[in-house]
Image (cartoon, helix red, strand yellow):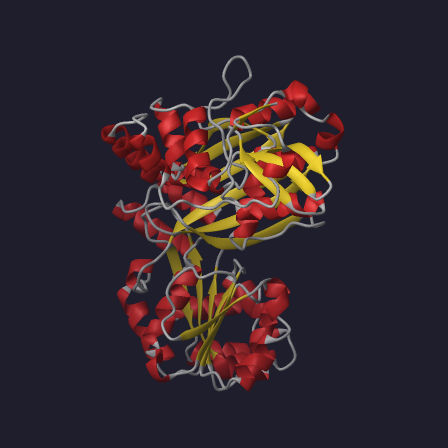
Length: 518
């Protein structure tokens, strides 16, 4: 191990970064390593990719990793080391988990009675430092090493890991090495791929672990495009980043779903997350959704003008239930926000139960909680808080939808998103519950179905209103066929009928209509 100063381990112990007040670019400029123009180009690249400035300068060829490491050590008052794998303490290195060291981009150098000194690529990552300190069982000392030198040392100690040189978007080179190094926190990796996917107009990102590698694909329109091949170790950083943003934790489960707000240089984006445990590792699917800056109008969401006007009139009374149904991403949460705005809630007590803040809900007390955690308590909460308007966004999917018949929904406006895909099947289910028919007749205002078509195109929407004839059919327990007949007699138009009209008008491609209805 070749150090920038005498190899006395004690000089590193109990030292955490002490910033000098100068940034890395200022130090590199003062030393004449880079020019103002190169820094400016690096900053522009940083805004595009979410990479750190040192990484963009290395990527452009303006500086080397060693240059960035030297500037980082000057900035933080630490020592830059050039790691010689043959000088490392093999037993010391192997006393730590390989996954921890690779994820942290760290290698232990020396052990003393009062702690362990490490070479790390990013001494500013305090979460990583805390993990190393916990694993060491005592205080740690720090010096700076380049990512390549650290990974080369870890390869020498543990054997060459698949993709020890992490892949960037260009994937693996012919010799099996990777051309971009991702930091262990996963922040840059996630930001880069989200930004890249959004620029391509992709609606989904897929990270699939197979055969010791991580394959990255984007779905653009309806085509799944292969984008990159990463080392499978990057998967751990990806999941850690999603968890740090408040995403779902898979634990021992087969599948976990959630949503987080992810910061990007261009602004925050809502990301729906699906984690699936498979034979080769966890498979991750991400669906980015733009963060709405204002509440959309009902017409912008695909409602016809007459329907939108009738819905506004119904919710203005602030009593009753509106059910908005459809798969995730169909616009149902946006419809709940539009209905809330139509109820003019400025003088009302509003409580919203939701998995994530998808659209603005002015004046609402927003409770972000997993459905299973809130399902047993929402009735107690809205009663205790004397809520006037309640939003249940994804809380009552499947059979749990019968909760809308609860006494807690009485004398309140309750706006509900659920996953039922057939309005009349949902009606039959609710009618079969104890006192279901009488409660539906007294409370149900409208039942909406929504289907996503494609990005930038209003969803397909059907709206079932409950006029006197339909309420009478419910009271007498009419079968599905009769309910459908009565609904059509009062002007109801199904999703399929609306799709045919839009296809005939030329406002909806037939292929998109078929996919939306499938």
